[in-house]
Amino acid sequence: MAAQTRIGPEIVEVSPRDGLQNEAAILSTETKLQLISALIGAGARRIEATSFVHPRLVPQMADAEQVAAGLPRADGVTFSALALNDRGLDRALAAGMDEINVVVVCSETFGRRNQNAGIDEMIATAQRVADRAHSNGARITVTLAAAFGCPFEGEVPAERVLAIAERVADIQPDELAIADTIGVGVPAQVRTLADVATAACPGVPLRWHFHNTRNTGYANVQAAVDAGPTAIDASVGGIGGCPFAPAATGNVATEDVGYLLHRQGFDSGLDLAALTDISRWVGEQLGAPTPALLGRAGLFPPPTE
Image 1 (cartoon, helix red, strand yellow):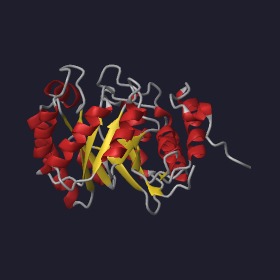
Image 2 (tube, helix red, strand yellow):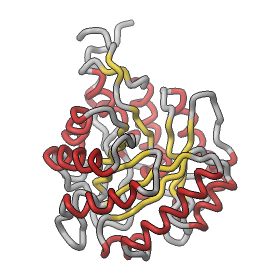
Image 3 (spheres, rainbow, N blue to C red):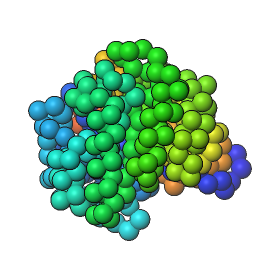
């Protein structure tokens, strides 16, 4: 392979939040902070650290304040959190988070089951959250969830995603994320939704969130990279998913995404060998091997002594 000289997509490490939130085991605050420190050591620079949601709904995130208080602050590293409503934002701002992620679901039914709100209400909430986040110096990402399909309504038309994205443009997000929340997407949809997002929110950086539920996640990552400069969510070990969507398991694994990019000459800034070590350790903490494949097969070419 030629030397890695191409600037790759930005990798957003989501295992401490979207990864752990769907795992049966609830890790201690100390263990979560060990994970975050290890990820920084492996090159992660944008990390979704926690979510400020009701602990009854997502008990894995009940220690959000404690995690935020213990974050290993370092130059060039930013920490984000999910905040679905005004109360969540209050907590996230008080905890000093750098970035806030707010969600608008592209399905009325899923929105009401996931956030107890319809599309109009979610957009209004996102506007309030964005305004307050910006006034407090935090960046805002608006995620369009279930943009590829809904577990309750089925297909989500690209025209509906476009209409929602056009309304989200008025919020003036710092970033727009398109999420395959239930892992049904295919590359053709990625290409279509990339065009939709560009048309609706010109100039707004684009981010993608893929689950590998049906083994199409990495093909979708490649389609997103081919579509242009972007950010990609990934979770070390491929852990996680959405607890409110049936069978929506498995984020794309950070080390497997990193390998996909590195073999094409992209420099992600990630240490793949370190990530495979972290993946094995995470599996030990969770009580089962992680779904990622790179650690099983090994790096190629093999490292030389």
